[in-house]
Length: 102
Image (cartoon, rainbow, N blue to C red):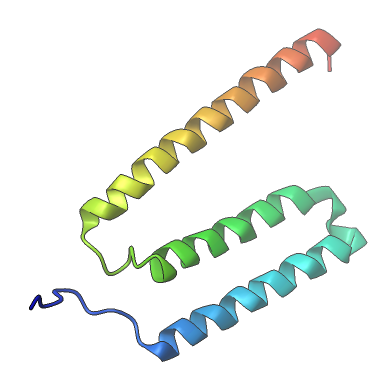
């Protein structure tokens, strides 16, 4: 018989998180269809998606309630991957800008 050391979220918490995720999804759909947001569409959608990702990982994957080691084990490679992708984008974007002269 094992005892759980950390308290997990209640059903109400999961329902509130689900409602927040639905609201963020509706905002994403609204941003996509509003012509005024076309110039900032990609950054806004990326930020909203990152917020949704964080909520899902924290609550539905239980990282908020688990040992910090598991959070580091998940977040470390994720951060490393993000840095590599951004670095590659900047390298290739800079190369294209140098070739085109813009």
